[in-house]
Length: 288
Image 1: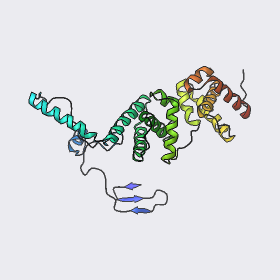
Image 2: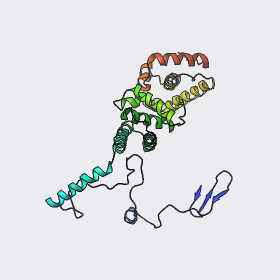
Image 3: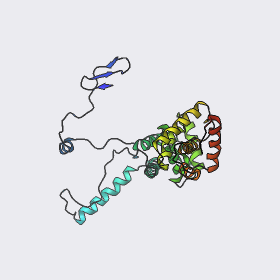
Image 4: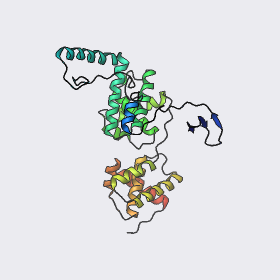
């Protein structure tokens, strides 16, 4: 824990003081409202990996107005147009920066389409920058690699998104995204945690609008199935969908297999197969 009042860096487990002279990274001034905070700040936006130049370059507004809000003269407009043109050219200096700028824009589109948090986009941008530094993009589709980094960051941050959902948000096919993902995971030597069916229970339950009791039952079913190793070697979405279907029946908020299949993006046959396995091995009995 960083205690800036005392200037100490303390271990939360044993209380050992690692450093007793840390610098306070906060502002050296006080602000009592938003107006004072805006006036006294002397820095710009923080660094971000989602922009190819990390947000360090200057931005020239496209409104032809001066600081007072008056229109610029034709001579001034011509000068500002020239400044904009060269500023835009200098921001993207070489082919690698053009590649990065295009890929980051594609990743932003996918992220906004799937309503992913900003942390996912930042993590994906870091993965893509590593791939560019190691020259892993050559011979591969930029859109495919960008989509693969989004999927990799979702896996890394435990956000339940499937390859099918990523593929629906981009013109690249699911097979190409999967191929790029496996290649990047191997070459970047990143540990990608496995997907557990329990991660999809809340998502499927919310989309089906089933009761909280049913969601709790589904989580319990998956916990028992995991202890019996019924989830090994099976698709997590299919097992989660089957558990949600069983829970909806047990809680009296019955949903059809077709409704569950549409929400989970799996086939009804998959749900029936997982349903039979769970019912037989866990010995669940449903009163008709």
